[in-house]
Length: 437
Image (cartoon, rainbow, N blue to C red; front, side, top):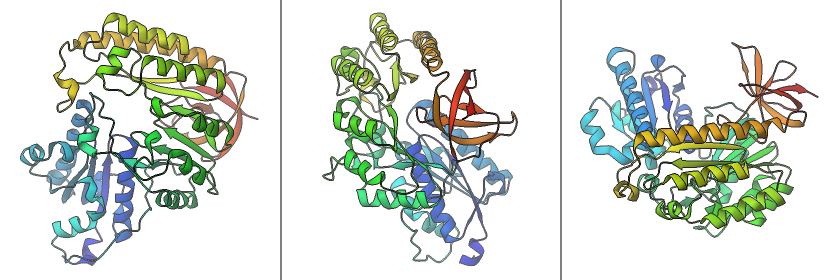
């Protein structure tokens, strides 16, 4: 096969896992598109299927294996000719995967994503070219008016329950000039909202002699970018300077995602977290008094080894007191090659499920209370999409991140991707109801 014939192949992709993984895939897709492949949405229409996997916890690995098996089915029973598996799963279980899934044509190390074209040329026995993809460009896989900007890879926090450092390595910041160039490319393509992501954005720059605030000061200068949102800020490095910038800078969404994971000192220590109960309380008190306009999102792990009823109750009481706006809960997953895997006093699964339901119900009541306080207020929203089935538009305020937080339902009078001032008139299971002002 020659290169001209190879370029007639269509490529489709599964994307699994976090938004950092999504960014990696979008760079891969741009390289494939720039080479000449056609990117198609439906894997049934593709000759080449790329599966971008997650391996963070057991359910993610199962989802990844299911996606790989689906791709293999298309290869054996459909149109697909090649299956390539990338992302985090090959980093964690490469030899097992090669043995169990010989139908996969190539397992791609995520560090070699830029070599995707060379890999495909090799698989089709095409003479290698000197093709090098244009840096900083992506094929967006979500709505075109917002994009995730990954500012670092890896993690050096070594939390006892987490395998990310083993999978992705130590924390590595991307230089500011490269991030600004990528953000400008996104803005020129119509992106209006940047969502800043890393395993820990507050540690940005520790390895390259800069910091998150310096990066943000450059990003807010970019024409076309109207909102900048931060995911994920570890509590011990949330400074007054950063909070002041979020509060006072027009383009900064008044929103912080701070994964706290727990509140009890003993549990936090066993988790190998770098913060204490008192530090978390001091931060929450500061946010609630000095920065009340900033909406708080967090995540917590329920059923960590050794978690007692009293410690779980303390977590519930913390939520009752501080009434965080948006919260996600996860049961503890006993992950191999993590410190907590070897802890004694593993909490039984039925106890985890019981606690998870209880705390989720509690936060549901808190969220309802918080959301009701905004009824009658007017907020700026961005319209994400039109729901064809239900005949309404779905939008978000700056207090809500895509796919995880509350939305605003608008019947008519708006366009997808545009900003509007909307009065929040009511609340339903779907979200706020809004009217354009």
